[in-house]
Image 1 (tube, rainbow, N blue to C red):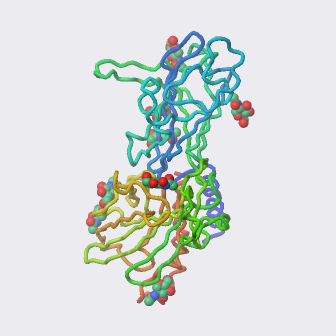
Image 2 (cartoon, rainbow, N blue to C red):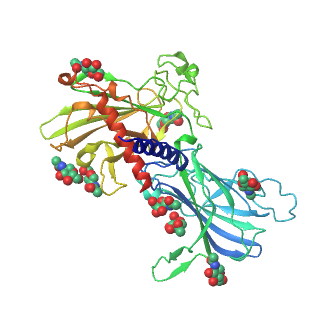
Image 3 (cartoon, rainbow, N blue to C red):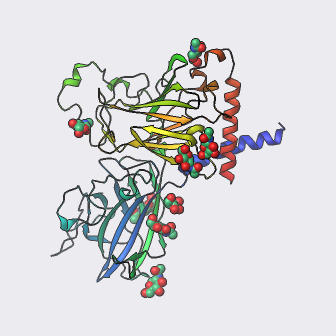
Amino acid sequence: MNQRILKFTSWAILLSMFISHADSYDPLDPFGNVTIKWDVISWTADGYVALVTMFNFQMYRHFMSPGWTMTWGWAKKEVIWSMVGAQTTEQGDCSKFKGNVPHCCKRVPTVVDLLPGVPYNQQIANCCKGGVVASWGQDPGSAVSAFQVSVGLSGTTNKTVKLPTNFTLLGPGPGYTCGPAKVVPSTVYLTPDRRRKTQALMTWNVTCTYSQLLVSRHPSCCVSLSSFYNETITPCPKCSCGCHNKKDCIKPDSNKLKMRGINTPKKDNTPLLQCTHHMCPIRVHWHVKVNYKDYWRVKIAITNFNYRMNFTQWTLVAQHPNLNNVTQVFSFDYKPIVPYQSINDTAMFYGMKFYNDLLMEAGESGNVQTEILLKKDKDVFTFKQGWAFPRKIYFNGDECMLPPPDAYPILPNAAHQNFTPFSRFAAFLVLIVVTVSHFL
Ligand SMILES: *[C@@H]1O[C@H](CO)[C@@H](O)[C@H](O)[C@H]1NC(C)=O
Ligand SMILES: *[C@@H]1O[C@H](CO)[C@@H](O)[C@H](O)[C@H]1NC(C)=O
Ligand SMILES: *[C@@H]1O[C@H](CO)[C@@H](O)[C@H](O)[C@H]1NC(C)=O
Ligand SMILES: *[C@@H]1O[C@H](CO)[C@@H](O)[C@H](O)[C@H]1NC(C)=O
Ligand SMILES: *[C@@H]1O[C@H](CO)[C@@H](O)[C@H](O)[C@H]1NC(C)=O
Ligand SMILES: *[C@@H]1O[C@H](CO)[C@@H](O)[C@H](O)[C@H]1NC(C)=O
Ligand SMILES: *[C@@H]1O[C@H](CO)[C@@H](O)[C@H](O)[C@H]1NC(C)=O
Ligand SMILES: *[C@@H]1O[C@H](CO)[C@@H](O)[C@H](O)[C@H]1NC(C)=O
């Protein structure tokens, strides 16, 4: 390879790494975002009433209990007179007001969803789910959250109103970065009889994207591998999720587990982990189970090692070249994800409602499993060189750490085949593809 190409390539690789970090770009969900839309539905004597709707356009990342928290900064001295379907966590100092007291006078209000079961007069459509919002891939109908806000001491026309700034979103932890509010064409509503259209007086959108790197330096899950053709189980890499919390972990036979309240979730979701060499709250095990003539079968098991967390509406995403020929999926729901029309190698799995959509806290019931039947494509199918193992695994939208390729179980007759150079070459190819795709 000549010097200039080499230089360009290494520069491009560096650049692509930088871009993907800064951009929070997820190659398996390249358009994933959360859009917050404000529709001004009426102007009032001193401000406006807006319907705020949050759309979770992410294919496989949802907002788990205790749900989302949204903040913004008012551009002027706005107050919130009232809210329906959500509330601010603090009222702030409203001592200037006599008689009618606002719901919130803070410069930066912190808004949370109401809990299910509040009185009907405090509800609007898509509100009051305790901030829990499904992912778009799992259930678009539940991937929306909404509230209504009545704003005072603000502009009262579309020329004088100032857009809120500095949006932040917690889901429930960190990870989201929101852009500025932008005025967009007004939302058009169809009346229930579908015979008349009305429209918002003004609409602005805010787009937020997720980056795992903002959450932690470490992954939050890991992958272990095994196969019928080799009895070696390739474990999760040691300290996959960082061993910083090792001193607080609990052995599965510890007496502490009999203490009352040990499983009570903490408000900030801090985990209480079972001691493992990987120290991950979640392990995904991929087992190549059976080889048939035209098909092969994979078993996937997800294990929860966190004593303080039930994962509701969990999602698993896997990338493997044979996922374009899924024949049958047992006991999980399944959906192909095809972000690029030409490549069909990614699948999303999630629990069946009321059956296994709840991944229970660590312990005997803290696991869910599936088996997948895949049709072989004779031209590419092989058990060699770890081909049967996944390229990527995500749990709840976070990428899990895979073992290094040279630790994969290998075919006995290929035991002496040295495939490290191959995997290096493959990694190099992948980098080139990633780099090139960034320039497209
Ligand atoms: C957000 O996601 C939606 C749905 O995938 C997409 O149409 C829209 O373009 C995205 N917005 C941005 C700013 O990426
Ligand atoms: C928004 O953030 C900028 C930069 O952090 C800060 O200077 C500004 O005061 C903030 N505005 C509001 C209204 O909070
Ligand atoms: C604003 O957000 C809404 C809801 O997600 C979307 O339908 C609309 O296309 C967005 N507008 C623009 C200009 O992005
Ligand atoms: C503001 O309102 C006027 C009419 O009242 C309308 O013509 C104009 O398009 C609106 N501008 C925006 C940004 O919505
Ligand atoms: C998990 O769910 C079960 C059944 O609903 C409940 O008994 C248990 O307390 C929950 N555990 C945690 C950690 O929330
Ligand atoms: C992708 O593969 C799945 C599983 O075989 C199939 O159901 C789906 O139709 C494929 N989608 C496309 C766009 O090829
Ligand atoms: C696998 O799927 C691809 C695309 O979905 C299709 O073109 C191909 O024929 C399938 N192969 C087999 C062996 O069914
Ligand atoms: C099974 O795989 C391991 C790990 O790659 C390898 O060291 C071992 O030799 C393999 N066993 C057989 C019987 O080939």
